[in-house]
Length: 159
Image (tube, rainbow, N blue to C red):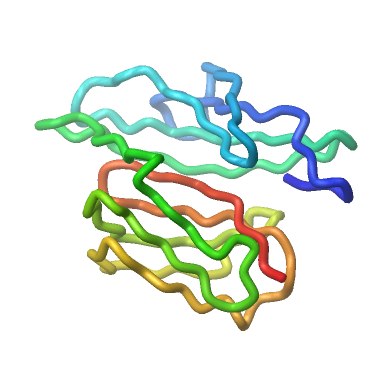
């Protein structure tokens, strides 16, 4: 969530194991423009439903909803955030997604500021991906990257 001066005042993850029910809240921490939180471990086969709420310093709030399933055999594999590079950001037409540790991107989704999915690419199975964004209006978007075990959501700016 961005306002005219580009600041987020708070971000939270609400989560639960029943669709539509989010009884647990975790305050997200940030490092620059990257926000993160950790949902506690769950048993294999459990679906974890979550939403991310972010509020800018003008009290405008936006929400992003999703879920994941905990694998029976190995739990959720964690992305190594420091091995992910998304560049250039801001971008003018192409954005590159690279996992330097060889992790594979399976699905990419792009959401606008009101949470509408404007792009989806699946069955990618590559550690290096270029995404053409030239058909989209300038502004702030959220890029969701899924490796089949976990998801990362990153803010990207299109100029």
